[in-house]
Image (cartoon, helix red, strand yellow):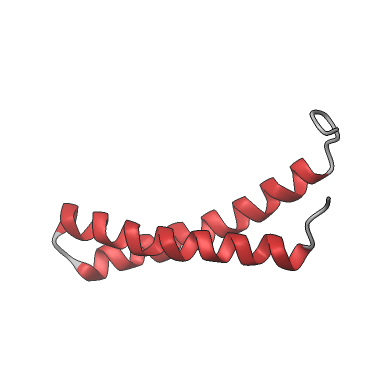
Length: 67
């Protein structure tokens, strides 16, 4: 069973939204600044989103371990 690109992107976005909130909370607890924490979380989410999609597409091309 193969995933569509839209499903992969939806999974990546939902994961990154969860990460955005958790990174903002952690950043705020460590720095005391919502601006710094939010900026760091947004940058991290964008980089993570692109990396996740590329990672999933890379592994989708590899048949090793599939039945």
